[in-house]
Image (cartoon, rainbow, N blue to C red):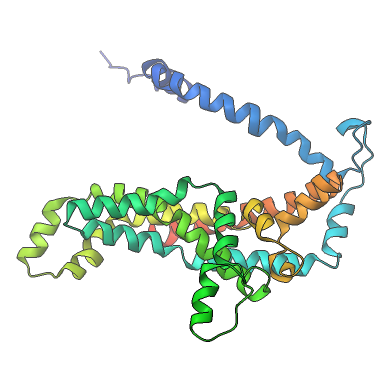
Length: 311
């Protein structure tokens, strides 16, 4: 009697079987998916106003179609190259400092004094919970040319007070390093969690072989957290053009606008203050397209070079 081979299960049947077996996990996932669908995917139909001359009384579908007119207007505007240059320089500056949380996490991981380690972690995590408005207020108080603490030390050194907040050449440094002060400790949490998963036996074996502490950091700890580093770097690249206009707007004034004008503050001014919704939407869409291109490109490079990627 000839034995018949088992029927090959279809892909849809396998997916259904897995869904039934793990329905509790999908139930937990449902609220998150519902949130993203309602608040992130459904509003995407509004992107079309970037290609229309939008009027509120006509609605999105009733407004006349103008194609790429708003994009051409932005590309040909007087401010385009200054906005693009300032945005790229500011983001590149912040990206250069990407290794700082990694270095800080590796340093904290090597501390053996328990109380000092906890104190250091608390001290560096705390600024993350300070409001951006408060941070800028602190900058104004500390850097004021007349009453600021920093300029008091400058006078003690026999120099003239420095107008930090109104000098264009100081804006980028103040913005980036104050941001690092606020986010450094919080950014190390993920790296410390990754370091906690490193097998201690690897360090014991390295000690037996005579490896120094620095060699163990470079040969064991750093390669162990490299997948986490690559993923977070890709995510940072995906937000390369998005700085966050709140802090820039609070620090911006007419005297430092030469270096503080960025794309997102321009979107805020044209869209919210001037009511040019279609023009602002076109600029925001341009910014998002650049982010998507960078995200996909860096992800492909990372997958080929290190076998670690988002997808």
